[in-house]
Image 1 (spheres, rainbow, N blue to C red):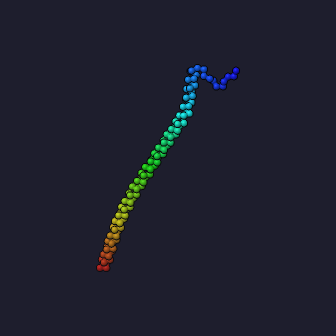
Image 2: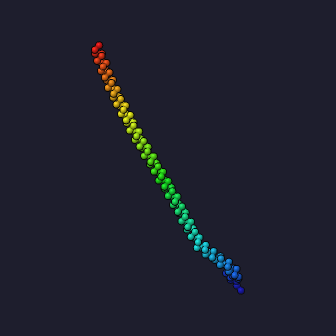
Image 3: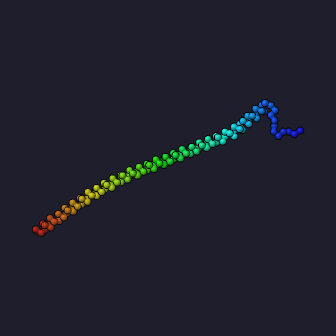
Length: 115
């Protein structure tokens, strides 16, 4: 007689074990792809969140740099205005001194002509 290639369960215990193995095999084929898909979705969500965090950080950094640039530009404009006022004041003083010098020169010429 030939033996069967498929072992036939001889007892209820073997039948239960065969059912458990069949169930676990079926469950593995059903749930493992779903778990992997959920893990993939979770990884995608995590990557998306990290990307948004980096984008937000870059945006805040760019905004801070722009604010600093505007502050330094405003300070530079104030410095330019202050220097213009100082220059104008010095120019006015130089003009007054030049006029005084000419007046003294005219007075000296007048004194020399009298003598």
